Length: 228
Image 1 (cartoon, rainbow, N blue to C red):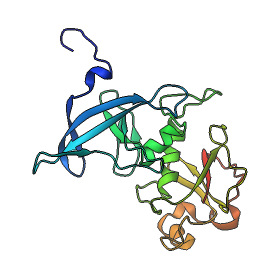
Image 2: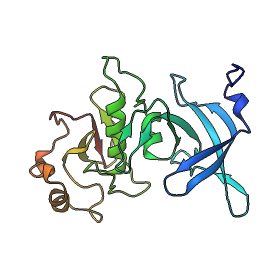
Image 3: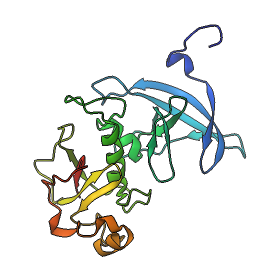
């Protein structure tokens, strides 16, 4: 504050923020409540209940939709995001991220872009790759090829997430890097896109689809893998 005071989370309850939304323009967002994320063992993440005001009638409603765990909260994440789904570092800006979206899920799964792994590697790129994977953004252009509530099993070489012992009928789908899929064994939802369509749309994937893509994939740039 101008007088030097630093407001804590609790002090901010009731505050109204003016937030820029790419699709809806400027919005008024009110902080209703805040709590530590009970699923975060590191204690980094604080979850905010946020309401957005309807400019037409002045009513307030939850900014976020609930995710698979029923949580409909948000948290601030440093940086900005492009239309193509790339996370850009920016110390002067932050985004409000809902827990039910791809960005929020990947943070809460352990891919915290502000942290480093036990081996010293930054998790920034791992988080970016995870977001591409959740959205089935094969080409890294912001175009997703999935549907809400589609089950996936996510894992990585760092051991932050490990493959399920019993995948429950899920099979290997793809290996992912910061710019989308490195290789694709199968499309997540065949009715949305085929391997041939993906190769035509994204020439760098030619010769990298089908059985040549393996769960032990070791190509350069592979950070995240998944089953579906």
